[in-house]
Image 1 (tube, rainbow, N blue to C red):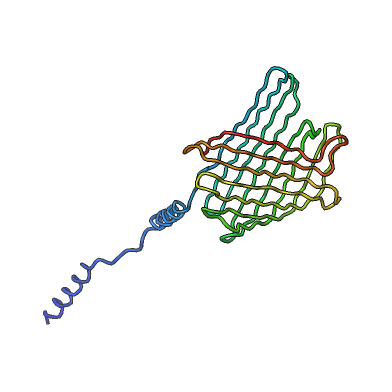
Image 2 (cartoon, rainbow, N blue to C red):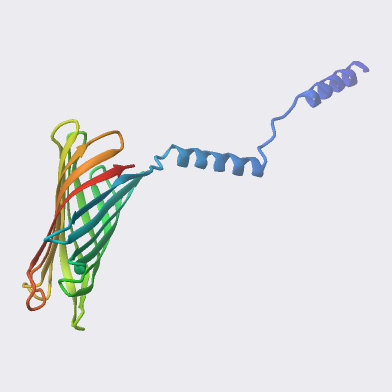
Length: 261
């Protein structure tokens, strides 16, 4: 009769010595989830700003006293499916110490890729042009774009969207209306050190077919060193309905030296 209690006691003691795995504490689960999320974010390409700043100037003295100064710049940041682009132009010219031209232009654009080649965008453009009597011209809009190619040889994209356009002249006249926006970018490598590029955007009005504004830049870029580049640029702005006495097209031809980053 004593054998049965001894056997039962030994079995209970053995079962008590077995360690049962415990469930992870809630804090440990939260920490593990946070670490996994941080690793996923770290794996995403955060990107850096890349682009360049270009400077050009001319100076003549004697029978003609002329000066001109120009600064152009572009910066692009790609971060996963997000792309940010900023561009700017400043131009100033004098003749016999009298100002003959003063212009400034800037653009901002955000792209959100929804597939490998297709993206949605939002854009903003502002401009002032003293000689064209433009006190302030600006437009904001959104649309869709397609990145047809983006490799070592070609970068080709087109965009289509709608926006709001506003221009105020120095005589107090102001016009605003809805526009359609069409844009393009074509860049190709001619050689290892020479690149050709053409970018532009056109804004036809939805209210009046004669109200058309456009901006285009064409350039040849030559790499001089690891961080230095020379550019021959043609910058065109077009207003189909300028103020009386002004030309439709404004052209700037620039030879600049710049730095890439």
